[in-house]
Length: 321
Ligand code: MG
Image (cartoon, rainbow, N blue to C red; front, side, top):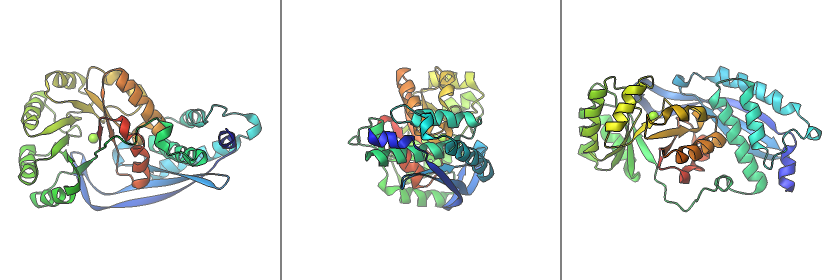
């Protein structure tokens, strides 16, 4: 209990922007990137430090400027309360702090996640407990993460499949000009199980269904965000006809989006950068289970800091990406 009480005393937030360079360019249906802007956060309390990260792929609308601005506000907020106020008086304190941080401004999900991740790291260190224990996740469970093969030319695909030799599952980005050619190229090199991610790239539901049937005969386990998220009726139809699960990614960001995914998708892809971090991701997992939806735990292109945080919840998911 002493550790918990200590935690009510002010934590000091600091942060630094950085650019993560990819080994090679990464292409999906939306375009190509060779780096991701990130911001690393540090929460310090009594010499104990928790680390967090915000990763900002361009399509989420955050960047260095927005994250630094939000974190400055959060910094002021965190430094304003005093122990005597007893403002955060629940057993761990995380829930209240995060709900207050969430109210600072709408959006800013990656910036919020960077605080959430650092807070969980800090609390774990203060309590001398691995973070997954805070969520009751069973570390012994076998977890296999997929390795992503972006849209690429023949030679690039061959190299990527080779690089992925240690992985049991691949994730393939489709939604290209010729998806069948791309898949056939991959199948020349491997018969591993595959997740397919379309990133909203297919525009016609009949074409999409034909493709899904074709893919399902090629050891593809699921299809992620086959069509633009606005095409709700088309996607619901697709899910009802599909022989394999259809997973929402772009369509579901936060807990409040779960309701509208029900009956439209078979499952959801939860990412810390979309949903503001571990606390909300866990809540989404519980709710998804309750409504019979499958759970994929994904990531953006964060460093090992953000990915390690997501890994704490991995045993609670059906698929890890
Ligand atoms: Mg996706």
